[in-house]
Amino acid sequence: MPALPPLPKKFSAEHIRSDGDRGKVYIDGLRRRFDIQFANGLRSIVIHRPDKRVGWSLMPGCDVFYESPLTSDEMPDPSTLLDWAQDGTEIIDGHECLRFIGHYTFSAGAAYEVCYVDRASGIRRREITYDKLGRQALTVDCRSVSLSAPDPSVFELPDGFRIEKL
Image: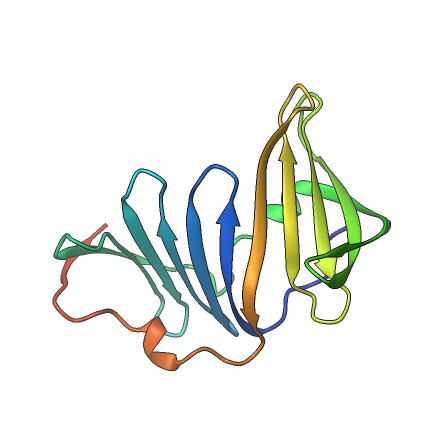
């Protein structure tokens, strides 16, 4: 099945969504952290630590976090649910990007996605989702990209949380 080019092994970036949500992603090999600030004011942190065989979900403002065992090193990549085809190039935020069109591998009506992959770095600079009627539903822009390894402390639990096992 045709796929998108792989993401860099180490990077951090800000995600800005057209629905008002914002986030920060940190990747260092198989370790991952996702900080999400929802448009409604809630915040969520998810940390994936295959080296410790656990995943943690935290809600700042609450002193409990959820720990769940990991049975695999890899986090599922939602882009694998689509068959991708390269469809030209485009400049996104000053970066030359390869344009890919993805069609779902299951029945999804007219839904599809467009992804712009930075030719130089492999970062997915923009992703656009179209709904089952073929209407644009969501745009996610990737900004403030650093291709350096994130500080290792971002993959640790913040102080003050107590565990709740799932």
